[in-house]
Image 1 (tube, rainbow, N blue to C red):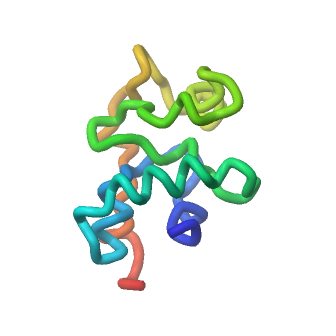
Image 2 (tube, rainbow, N blue to C red):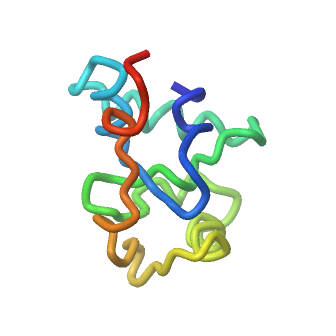
Length: 102
């Protein structure tokens, strides 16, 4: 799972569900969320690029500060308003379409 997250290009985002679907278990988006929450000690996993299915920063409270996720996304050129990625569909990266099957 972390290997997939490492492949999300800078300036793009994906969802917990998209990662779960790519890995063959659509119903496991919560598991992906838990894995992202546990990934903060791994400095090479860009967990800030994983948001919920509507583009909301639902995992922001698991970062060092509550605005760190937004800061990191904005640093990559994305705009976030009211905890939601603006133009989410435009910046959405779907591993099922971008990568070969694992």
